[in-house]
Length: 360
Image (cartoon, rainbow, N blue to C red; front, side, top):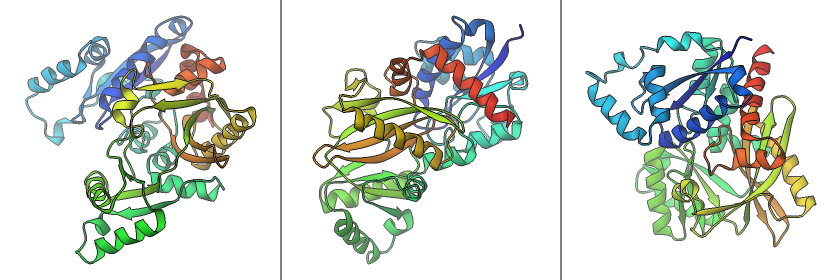
């Protein structure tokens, strides 16, 4: 039996570089054990923070290392030049890949850019295509798609960097409009960053002004959302044209909100699977999750996050993540494990879905 050669693409030029490495380690382990051993051959390709693609031997060292940051630093110091002309010697092993698994999080990973490159390579890849990835990353475009699909959301306002970094007459008026429309507390978020990077919860005019200025340094598009007192529920989706939803999970934590440190530090948050909600609420969330998945043209996988306002019984969609984490503390694989699909089988299913999507 000829093994399918899986190109595991990880690292990348984003603030979620380290999370990507942790996700890749888990996926690599799943591909090299059990039944997957007879089906797949792993070809790891690591993308450094500077954008340089590394060959498989060094990429495997990153996966095997207990301190990949130190290994990367040593390798960068050995490079003669980091000019743009040296960023694109694509490793020869890429020509051997039968299907790509781009476990890249954040900008340049799940925003449609790498998906466009892989599509030009004319090789199947796991996950959403260019449109689904781009809409899933841009919170403003995502919310417009959800609104069009009739999915309820928190109140929000879209803001641009040019409005924030404008003359002294425009910026105060902008803040006035946000206060009148949304009130406090509210969240200020860059539209195109993941893992809660650059997000601030604000409760006053001075905090709003500071948060807007900070978010504008991350992105030219910013979104401001009303904060709600709600439970945070999540649902995983698997499939292409016909998607299925996992059981529902809940995240609880003691920090002010689910920030980067809380999300990726063990013990900072508790994941309750299944979420202690009624069957009616769970069913509604699962239905909304598949609707959201299709609304942004996602494929393969997605994790959809919700707010459940118990006082009113409202369920509000928050966002979709088209390449969720696969670390030991990641909700996506844990939800499917509890639903009856173990990690190794989940990875296998995602690869098969990539082949199915490509064959269409």
